Amino acid sequence: MNQPRSVLDIPIFHKIYELYKMLHSYHSRIPKAERYTLWQKCENTALTLLETVIETGHQKGNDRLHSLYVISNKLDLLKVLIRLAKDTRTIENSQYLTIQTLIQEIGKMIGGWIKSVPH
Image (cartoon, rainbow, N blue to C red):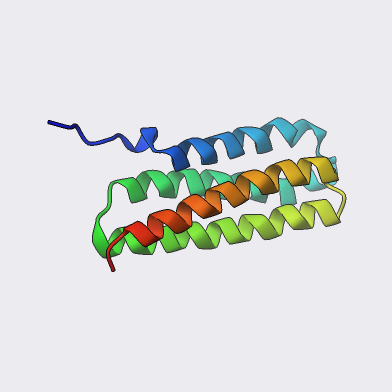
C-alpha cells in the first residue's frame, strides 16, 4: 500500500524553499536603506508562501483550493516586490532574472495544482 507523500516532499515546497534561500543569500548585499524595508518584505512573503504550502498540503477540497489561490496571490505580490527591488536598484538585473525564473516555475506549479483540485 502506498503511503501518503509528506508535504515536505512535494516539488513546489522545494522550489519555494530554494527561492527563500536565494533571497536570503542576497540579504547582505542589499543596500541598508532597503534591507529592512522592501527586502525584508520580500523575504517575509517567501516565508509566508512556504508556510501556506505546508498548510495547503494538509487540506482537502475547497479549503485546499482557497489556500492555493492565497498562494497564487502572495506569489503575485512577490513578483511586484521583486520588480520594485530591481527598479529601485536594490538588486541587480542578473539577480532579478534569476529570481523571476524561479518565481515563474513556482507559478506554473501552482497553476497545475489548482487545475488538479476538483472544483
